[in-house]
Length: 368
Image (cartoon, rainbow, N blue to C red; front, side):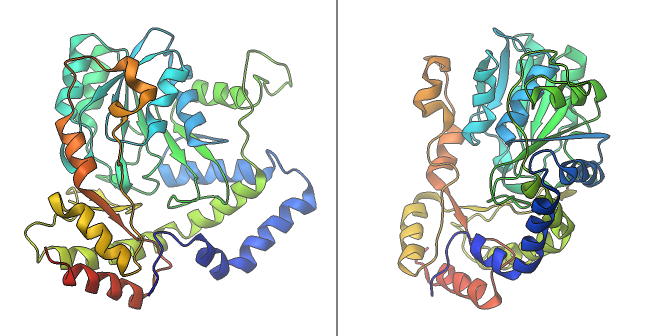
Protein backbone atom coordinates (compact mmCIF):
# COMPACT_ATOMS: atom_id res chain seq x y z
CA UNK A 1 0.00 0.00 0.00
CA UNK A 2 1.18 3.51 -0.82
CA UNK A 3 0.15 6.21 1.67
CA UNK A 4 1.64 9.63 0.86
CA UNK A 5 2.18 12.11 3.66
CA UNK A 6 -0.44 14.38 2.06
CA UNK A 7 -3.11 13.89 -0.64
CA UNK A 8 -4.41 17.23 -1.91
CA UNK A 9 -5.54 15.51 -5.10
CA UNK A 10 -7.91 13.30 -3.14
CA UNK A 11 -9.50 16.29 -1.42
CA UNK A 12 -10.01 17.96 -4.79
CA UNK A 13 -11.60 14.85 -6.29
CA UNK A 14 -14.01 14.51 -3.37
CA UNK A 15 -15.19 18.12 -3.67
CA UNK A 16 -14.49 18.80 -7.34
CA UNK A 17 -18.00 19.89 -8.26
CA UNK A 18 -18.20 22.49 -5.48
CA UNK A 19 -14.68 23.79 -6.05
CA UNK A 20 -15.18 24.21 -9.78
CA UNK A 21 -18.49 26.00 -9.18
CA UNK A 22 -16.71 28.45 -6.87
CA UNK A 23 -14.10 29.11 -9.54
CA UNK A 24 -16.78 29.71 -12.16
CA UNK A 25 -18.52 32.13 -9.80
CA UNK A 26 -15.36 34.24 -9.61
CA UNK A 27 -14.75 34.11 -13.35
CA UNK A 28 -18.35 35.21 -13.94
CA UNK A 29 -18.06 38.44 -11.96
CA UNK A 30 -14.45 39.05 -13.03
CA UNK A 31 -13.08 40.48 -9.77
CA UNK A 32 -10.30 37.95 -9.46
CA UNK A 33 -8.51 40.04 -6.80
CA UNK A 34 -10.27 41.47 -3.73
CA UNK A 35 -13.63 40.29 -4.98
CA UNK A 36 -16.65 39.82 -2.70
CA UNK A 37 -15.35 36.40 -1.67
CA UNK A 38 -12.50 38.08 0.22
CA UNK A 39 -14.82 40.22 2.34
CA UNK A 40 -17.03 37.18 2.92
CA UNK A 41 -14.01 35.19 4.10
CA UNK A 42 -12.93 37.97 6.45
CA UNK A 43 -16.38 38.01 8.05
CA UNK A 44 -16.28 34.23 8.33
CA UNK A 45 -12.86 34.34 10.00
CA UNK A 46 -14.13 36.79 12.61
CA UNK A 47 -16.86 34.31 13.45
CA UNK A 48 -14.54 31.30 13.55
CA UNK A 49 -11.77 33.03 15.50
CA UNK A 50 -13.92 35.21 17.73
CA UNK A 51 -12.25 38.51 16.83
CA UNK A 52 -13.77 41.75 15.61
CA UNK A 53 -11.39 42.16 12.68
CA UNK A 54 -9.85 39.92 10.03
CA UNK A 55 -7.75 40.95 7.04
CA UNK A 56 -6.92 38.48 4.26
CA UNK A 57 -3.50 38.84 2.63
CA UNK A 58 -1.22 37.01 0.24
CA UNK A 59 0.47 34.74 2.78
CA UNK A 60 0.83 34.06 6.48
CA UNK A 61 4.39 35.35 6.22
CA UNK A 62 3.09 38.71 5.03
CA UNK A 63 0.41 38.60 7.72
CA UNK A 64 3.00 38.25 10.46
CA UNK A 65 5.14 41.00 8.97
CA UNK A 66 2.16 43.36 8.78
CA UNK A 67 1.29 42.54 12.39
CA UNK A 68 4.80 43.44 13.52
CA UNK A 69 4.79 46.71 11.59
CA UNK A 70 1.35 47.84 12.70
CA UNK A 71 2.09 46.88 16.31
CA UNK A 72 4.99 49.33 16.28
CA UNK A 73 8.05 47.10 15.91
CA UNK A 74 10.81 49.21 14.38
CA UNK A 75 14.37 48.59 13.16
CA UNK A 76 16.65 47.85 16.07
CA UNK A 77 13.96 46.30 18.26
CA UNK A 78 14.53 42.85 19.73
CA UNK A 79 11.80 40.24 19.29
CA UNK A 80 11.62 36.89 21.10
CA UNK A 81 10.81 34.00 18.74
CA UNK A 82 10.80 30.20 19.14
CA UNK A 83 13.80 28.23 17.96
CA UNK A 84 11.49 25.28 17.27
CA UNK A 85 9.18 26.44 14.48
CA UNK A 86 8.99 27.04 10.74
CA UNK A 87 11.28 29.70 9.31
CA UNK A 88 8.34 32.04 8.54
CA UNK A 89 7.81 32.66 12.26
CA UNK A 90 11.19 34.37 12.50
CA UNK A 91 11.98 35.75 9.03
CA UNK A 92 9.35 38.55 9.20
CA UNK A 93 11.17 39.87 12.27
CA UNK A 94 14.30 40.42 10.17
CA UNK A 95 12.17 41.82 7.35
CA UNK A 96 10.87 44.43 9.81
CA UNK A 97 14.45 45.41 10.63
CA UNK A 98 14.32 43.88 14.11
CA UNK A 99 16.54 41.29 15.76
CA UNK A 100 15.18 37.80 16.52
CA UNK A 101 16.02 36.51 20.00
CA UNK A 102 15.58 32.76 19.96
CA UNK A 103 13.95 30.85 22.81
CA UNK A 104 14.39 27.11 23.33
CA UNK A 105 11.44 24.73 23.12
CA UNK A 106 9.58 23.84 26.27
CA UNK A 107 6.99 21.13 26.80
CA UNK A 108 4.47 19.88 24.23
CA UNK A 109 6.48 21.38 21.34
CA UNK A 110 5.66 24.87 22.52
CA UNK A 111 8.20 27.62 23.28
CA UNK A 112 9.65 27.69 26.79
CA UNK A 113 7.19 30.13 28.33
CA UNK A 114 9.17 30.59 31.54
CA UNK A 115 12.25 31.67 29.60
CA UNK A 116 10.15 33.90 27.37
CA UNK A 117 8.62 35.62 30.39
CA UNK A 118 12.10 36.11 31.84
CA UNK A 119 13.06 37.94 28.65
CA UNK A 120 9.90 40.04 28.85
CA UNK A 121 10.58 40.97 32.47
CA UNK A 122 14.22 41.78 31.76
CA UNK A 123 13.30 44.77 29.61
CA UNK A 124 15.63 43.51 26.86
CA UNK A 125 12.95 42.86 24.22
CA UNK A 126 10.19 44.94 22.67
CA UNK A 127 7.99 42.16 21.28
CA UNK A 128 7.26 38.44 21.41
CA UNK A 129 6.15 36.25 18.53
CA UNK A 130 4.97 32.92 19.88
CA UNK A 131 3.81 29.92 17.84
CA UNK A 132 1.09 27.32 18.31
CA UNK A 133 2.62 24.29 16.62
CA UNK A 134 0.94 21.34 14.91
CA UNK A 135 -2.61 22.48 15.68
CA UNK A 136 -2.57 22.79 19.46
CA UNK A 137 -2.87 25.98 21.51
CA UNK A 138 -1.14 26.38 24.83
CA UNK A 139 -2.19 28.68 27.66
CA UNK A 140 -0.73 32.08 26.77
CA UNK A 141 -2.36 33.88 29.70
CA UNK A 142 0.82 34.07 31.85
CA UNK A 143 2.79 35.33 28.85
CA UNK A 144 0.06 37.80 27.86
CA UNK A 145 -0.09 39.13 31.41
CA UNK A 146 3.69 39.57 31.54
CA UNK A 147 3.74 41.35 28.17
CA UNK A 148 0.93 43.67 29.24
CA UNK A 149 2.69 44.55 32.50
CA UNK A 150 5.97 45.31 30.70
CA UNK A 151 4.41 47.03 27.66
CA UNK A 152 5.81 44.34 25.35
CA UNK A 153 3.96 43.51 22.12
CA UNK A 154 2.60 39.95 21.86
CA UNK A 155 1.77 38.40 18.48
CA UNK A 156 0.67 34.82 17.88
CA UNK A 157 1.74 32.75 14.90
CA UNK A 158 -1.36 30.59 14.58
CA UNK A 159 -0.63 29.44 11.03
CA UNK A 160 -1.07 25.82 12.08
CA UNK A 161 -3.92 26.28 14.53
CA UNK A 162 -7.06 27.52 12.76
CA UNK A 163 -9.92 26.05 14.76
CA UNK A 164 -7.76 25.35 17.78
CA UNK A 165 -8.80 26.74 21.15
CA UNK A 166 -7.65 26.83 24.76
CA UNK A 167 -10.43 27.10 27.34
CA UNK A 168 -12.68 28.00 24.42
CA UNK A 169 -10.50 30.95 23.39
CA UNK A 170 -8.94 31.26 19.93
CA UNK A 171 -5.68 32.93 18.87
CA UNK A 172 -5.90 36.71 18.79
CA UNK A 173 -8.05 37.08 21.90
CA UNK A 174 -5.20 37.86 24.30
CA UNK A 175 -2.60 39.27 21.92
CA UNK A 176 -2.19 42.22 19.58
CA UNK A 177 -2.94 39.94 16.63
CA UNK A 178 -2.62 36.40 15.34
CA UNK A 179 -1.49 35.33 11.88
CA UNK A 180 -3.22 32.51 9.99
CA UNK A 181 -2.10 30.44 7.03
CA UNK A 182 -4.05 29.14 4.05
CA UNK A 183 -1.09 27.21 2.66
CA UNK A 184 -2.40 24.09 0.88
CA UNK A 185 -0.97 21.84 3.61
CA UNK A 186 -2.93 23.57 6.37
CA UNK A 187 -6.25 22.47 7.88
CA UNK A 188 -8.13 25.08 5.83
CA UNK A 189 -5.76 25.51 2.92
CA UNK A 190 -6.20 27.26 -0.39
CA UNK A 191 -5.03 25.79 -3.68
CA UNK A 192 -2.26 28.38 -3.62
CA UNK A 193 -0.80 30.88 -1.20
CA UNK A 194 -2.81 32.88 1.31
CA UNK A 195 -3.02 34.11 4.87
CA UNK A 196 -4.80 36.47 7.22
CA UNK A 197 -4.49 38.53 10.37
CA UNK A 198 -7.14 38.39 13.08
CA UNK A 199 -7.22 41.08 15.74
CA UNK A 200 -9.50 43.15 17.95
CA UNK A 201 -7.61 46.32 17.00
CA UNK A 202 -9.60 48.20 14.35
CA UNK A 203 -6.81 50.70 13.64
CA UNK A 204 -4.35 47.90 12.97
CA UNK A 205 -6.82 46.17 10.66
CA UNK A 206 -7.41 49.36 8.69
CA UNK A 207 -3.70 49.89 8.24
CA UNK A 208 -3.08 46.30 7.15
CA UNK A 209 -5.79 46.75 4.52
CA UNK A 210 -3.76 49.68 3.19
CA UNK A 211 -0.45 47.85 3.38
CA UNK A 212 -1.72 44.84 1.45
CA UNK A 213 -2.31 47.00 -1.63
CA UNK A 214 0.46 49.56 -2.02
CA UNK A 215 -0.62 51.75 0.90
CA UNK A 216 -3.93 52.76 -0.71
CA UNK A 217 -6.89 53.67 1.50
CA UNK A 218 -10.62 53.48 0.81
CA UNK A 219 -10.54 56.84 -0.96
CA UNK A 220 -8.03 55.31 -3.41
CA UNK A 221 -5.31 57.62 -2.10
CA UNK A 222 -1.85 56.21 -1.50
CA UNK A 223 -1.07 57.11 2.10
CA UNK A 224 2.20 55.22 2.67
CA UNK A 225 4.59 52.73 1.14
CA UNK A 226 2.73 49.45 0.89
CA UNK A 227 3.05 46.02 -0.66
CA UNK A 228 1.28 43.76 -3.12
CA UNK A 229 -0.22 41.09 -0.89
CA UNK A 230 -3.76 40.52 -2.08
CA UNK A 231 -5.62 37.25 -1.65
CA UNK A 232 -7.08 35.99 -4.91
CA UNK A 233 -10.86 35.74 -4.91
CA UNK A 234 -10.75 32.09 -5.96
CA UNK A 235 -8.51 31.23 -3.02
CA UNK A 236 -10.81 33.12 -0.64
CA UNK A 237 -13.81 31.19 -1.95
CA UNK A 238 -12.03 27.85 -1.52
CA UNK A 239 -10.86 28.67 2.01
CA UNK A 240 -14.38 29.77 2.93
CA UNK A 241 -15.74 26.45 1.68
CA UNK A 242 -13.15 24.56 3.73
CA UNK A 243 -13.93 26.56 6.85
CA UNK A 244 -17.53 25.37 6.50
CA UNK A 245 -16.18 21.81 6.82
CA UNK A 246 -13.53 22.56 9.44
CA UNK A 247 -15.30 20.97 12.41
CA UNK A 248 -16.15 17.83 10.44
CA UNK A 249 -12.60 17.46 9.14
CA UNK A 250 -11.10 18.22 12.54
CA UNK A 251 -13.13 15.40 14.08
CA UNK A 252 -11.76 13.04 11.42
CA UNK A 253 -8.20 14.14 12.19
CA UNK A 254 -8.84 13.64 15.89
CA UNK A 255 -10.15 10.10 15.30
CA UNK A 256 -7.06 9.22 13.28
CA UNK A 257 -4.84 10.72 15.98
CA UNK A 258 -6.56 8.61 18.64
CA UNK A 259 -5.90 5.47 16.59
CA UNK A 260 -2.21 6.28 16.27
CA UNK A 261 -1.93 7.15 19.94
CA UNK A 262 -3.64 3.94 21.05
CA UNK A 263 -0.94 1.98 19.22
CA UNK A 264 2.01 4.07 20.36
CA UNK A 265 0.88 3.92 23.98
CA UNK A 266 1.85 0.24 23.94
CA UNK A 267 5.53 1.04 23.43
CA UNK A 268 7.49 2.74 26.24
CA UNK A 269 10.07 4.27 23.88
CA UNK A 270 7.41 5.95 21.72
CA UNK A 271 5.88 9.23 22.84
CA UNK A 272 2.65 10.24 21.07
CA UNK A 273 1.77 13.94 21.04
CA UNK A 274 0.62 15.19 24.42
CA UNK A 275 -2.81 16.79 24.37
CA UNK A 276 -2.91 19.80 26.67
CA UNK A 277 -5.92 19.74 29.03
CA UNK A 278 -8.63 22.22 27.99
CA UNK A 279 -7.07 22.59 24.53
CA UNK A 280 -8.81 21.63 21.30
CA UNK A 281 -6.11 20.03 19.15
CA UNK A 282 -6.93 20.25 15.42
CA UNK A 283 -3.99 17.98 14.47
CA UNK A 284 -2.56 19.91 11.58
CA UNK A 285 0.32 17.51 12.20
CA UNK A 286 0.62 14.30 14.20
CA UNK A 287 4.13 14.52 15.62
CA UNK A 288 5.43 11.68 17.76
CA UNK A 289 8.78 11.35 19.50
CA UNK A 290 10.69 8.15 18.76
CA UNK A 291 13.96 8.86 20.57
CA UNK A 292 17.01 7.24 19.01
CA UNK A 293 14.68 5.04 16.92
CA UNK A 294 13.41 7.97 14.82
CA UNK A 295 15.44 7.44 11.65
CA UNK A 296 15.05 3.66 11.81
CA UNK A 297 11.29 4.05 12.25
CA UNK A 298 11.11 6.46 9.34
CA UNK A 299 12.90 3.98 7.06
CA UNK A 300 10.64 1.16 8.27
CA UNK A 301 7.56 3.18 7.34
CA UNK A 302 9.07 4.38 4.07
CA UNK A 303 9.89 0.80 3.03
CA UNK A 304 6.24 -0.06 3.70
CA UNK A 305 5.01 2.83 1.54
CA UNK A 306 4.03 5.19 4.35
CA UNK A 307 5.13 8.79 3.84
CA UNK A 308 6.50 10.73 6.80
CA UNK A 309 8.16 14.09 7.41
CA UNK A 310 10.34 15.67 10.08
CA UNK A 311 9.16 18.89 11.72
CA UNK A 312 11.67 20.37 11.94
CA UNK A 313 14.87 18.68 10.78
CA UNK A 314 17.01 21.80 11.05
CA UNK A 315 16.41 24.11 14.03
CA UNK A 316 16.29 27.79 13.13
CA UNK A 317 19.38 28.65 15.16
CA UNK A 318 21.39 26.35 12.87
CA UNK A 319 20.20 27.94 9.64
CA UNK A 320 22.65 30.29 7.85
CA UNK A 321 19.95 32.98 7.64
CA UNK A 322 20.08 33.43 11.41
CA UNK A 323 23.80 32.94 12.02
CA UNK A 324 24.35 36.60 12.88
CA UNK A 325 21.72 36.44 15.62
CA UNK A 326 23.16 33.50 17.59
CA UNK A 327 25.63 34.25 20.38
CA UNK A 328 28.51 31.97 21.46
CA UNK A 329 26.76 31.06 24.71
CA UNK A 330 23.31 30.48 23.22
CA UNK A 331 22.14 26.89 23.45
CA UNK A 332 18.87 25.19 22.61
CA UNK A 333 19.06 21.59 23.87
CA UNK A 334 15.33 20.80 23.79
CA UNK A 335 14.92 22.17 20.27
CA UNK A 336 17.85 20.07 19.08
CA UNK A 337 16.51 16.96 20.81
CA UNK A 338 13.14 17.35 19.12
CA UNK A 339 14.77 17.84 15.72
CA UNK A 340 16.52 14.48 16.23
CA UNK A 341 13.58 12.54 17.65
CA UNK A 342 10.32 13.91 16.18
CA UNK A 343 8.50 12.27 13.28
CA UNK A 344 5.23 13.29 11.59
CA UNK A 345 2.75 10.67 10.40
CA UNK A 346 0.13 11.12 7.66
CA UNK A 347 -3.01 12.72 9.06
CA UNK A 348 -5.67 14.17 6.79
CA UNK A 349 -9.44 13.70 6.60
CA UNK A 350 -9.27 11.85 3.30
CA UNK A 351 -7.37 8.88 4.79
CA UNK A 352 -9.70 5.89 4.82
CA UNK A 353 -9.95 3.31 7.59
CA UNK A 354 -7.89 0.72 5.72
CA UNK A 355 -5.04 3.18 5.31
CA UNK A 356 -5.10 4.15 8.99
CA UNK A 357 -5.18 0.45 9.86
CA UNK A 358 -2.14 -0.11 7.66
CA UNK A 359 -0.14 2.67 9.32
CA UNK A 360 -1.07 1.28 12.73
CA UNK A 361 0.02 -2.21 11.65
CA UNK A 362 3.40 -0.89 10.56
CA UNK A 363 3.84 1.00 13.83
CA UNK A 364 3.06 -2.21 15.70
CA UNK A 365 5.43 -4.35 13.62
CA UNK A 366 8.36 -1.99 14.19
CA UNK A 367 11.08 -3.32 16.50
CA UNK A 368 10.85 -0.66 19.19
